[in-house]
Length: 455
Image 1: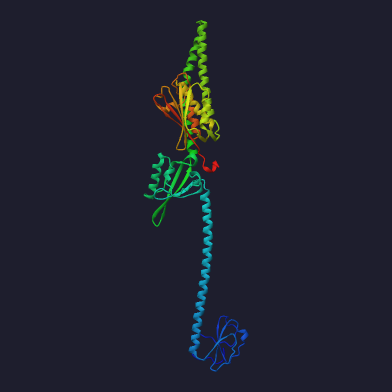
Image 2: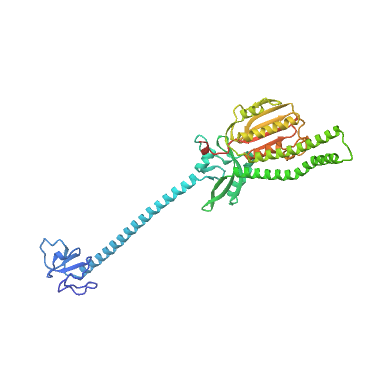
């Protein structure tokens, strides 16, 4: 600002007033210029003069410089670079602040998602866990801990096969091998030994986890399908029994109906007068045949009642149930094995199956029974050994409807025993020739609930 700025300056505008001059401008004011210092504002001002200037200078004046173009240009260059540096720093700070805010927001989102993820995994009804290369558990969700551990025992670091029924360990080893060696997902079914003596069937689905081209773990989801498999098994048995009943009913009804028909023909022949004794025999034969038909109907109705009987789970003292069922029965029985054997099952179903097997042993001519109580792999075992002739032929035929070694018997007792055991996820095993006699073992699932349901 002023009338006689040095010649040879470039990039500097001349102004006689502050009007229109930006607030961040650098001002060079001649000593002869009339400047209203109160209007300078935030501008930086250098006073240009070749004469000595006596202090004090206005506070807006940065300094006094000579009327030299080189000095002025040097100050302009320095100021320009400073402004650029300041603007760059300001942009950098704003950028860093924005990035920090974005990072904080991302961290909040990740934390929120992590909590949701953990909540989903932790509260999932399925088992969710990871396995290392040697089949050891690396991580397990809360559901798996409730299923497998007792007393706060840690699962991390323990081999999965330690919780698998011996017969299914090979399938689990195959799943691990396919995951780590072949890098392939896999799905198997395996029986797991659960906490507090429980047992269950699980569908295990594994997926390899890859990082930097290397499989470092298997992610596994285990779904409890014990009830589903038990229902499928029961429905399969029930459908097979009904089919055999329909086929066998025609055969079983044929004989008594033929007897009734024959006697009716004899009675109906008017040309032949029957003696009282013959008439009595005929009526007795008809009555016996009708009784057999009624017996078949009653046993079929009993089978249907067993199928439709509601299942009510609760704690069952197996030894007490066995002693109560035997009571003062028609055969002597000795009980050995575990004194305390408790299952969480349906006592009425166990009692029905046990009673049918005892009845079968008595009908086979056994004069005594040996009852053994034990447990294995999450099952309570009730073994009933008779001292009859044993079982010949196909063991599966024993449980078929209308099968009986005694032609006067209906043959549905063991059929009923098998179906009620299937309803509670259990089964019957047979050693047909125990030398002497046979051994029928009720294999009762001890408890298919997880720990949370037991609390």
